[in-house]
Length: 380
Image (cartoon, rainbow, N blue to C red; front, side):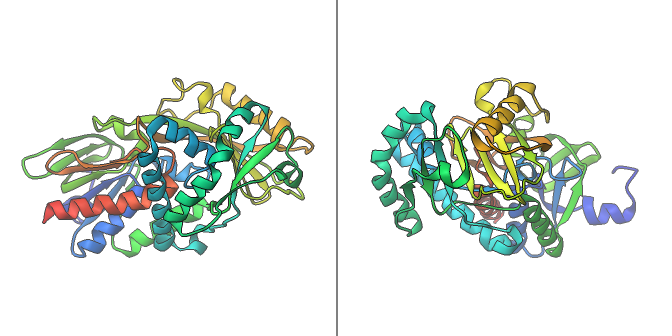
């Protein structure tokens, strides 16, 4: 036992852990809450490497999205129809799960719609996607029960003041959340549920014992009957699973008077994305400029990508508006050769819910619930 811990700390946080959850993001918090709900007498502890949640859950852009038309088109060509619509349905169900768990007010959820922006460079793609819109609407209606979700919007540039944007395809059901409010609401829920949370505890290794597992951390060892790894983009550091880190770089402007832009916007098949928040523009992306270099867990910014974001702000998004960048940051997603998450039993006492594919807001809660169900069934 770590000699730095008191008797009280050992009793409350370290000894006799039934479920140890690694990662205090959407998946980790939901896994812990669901485990506690299914096992009310169990001792549940969450370990988080950062002083605040350090994964994508606290760094994301706050998009409540499930599939833009150009992304769906591109994914169908790459992965096939069945997998894509199954994944879209998972995202939609996951968003409803998040809303039910946290509540729309605590998410500050706003359904303002989303737009795929089409410039000259995307015209050929646009011409291939438009004939599919009626079919996409049929498929989306089967998932959501909503009609005419996707429409062509030729007036997007005039409405929002964009430049060099020729057309767009809108999705009226997509929205945006306040990531900070969401994380605070999750934290309040886990504390109210008598779940222990330890921040600043980086897990370096997990080992399977005879009938338990041990997490070796920066503050000492934690043994638990069952361990759930919910670290998404950082999963490769602990598990041998098909998931790679993908860094996303983001900036936000200072407040802009009379900002007309309202909603969430995708550009270049979602590699760039922006939204309004508190009279500001939050803008991220550009990973396609250097995918190899952005396959990293290093929390850092690069001149190449930040220059591209600022250039697009000046030339397309805010062409006639003077703006200043207020803040810049980066976060780590988990991606792989499929957009389906990995929810599985790794060994006798170790489980994982990882590889959210940049859609953690949409599918994180559902992954957490599914993971908790798997763990509980295995325990029984």
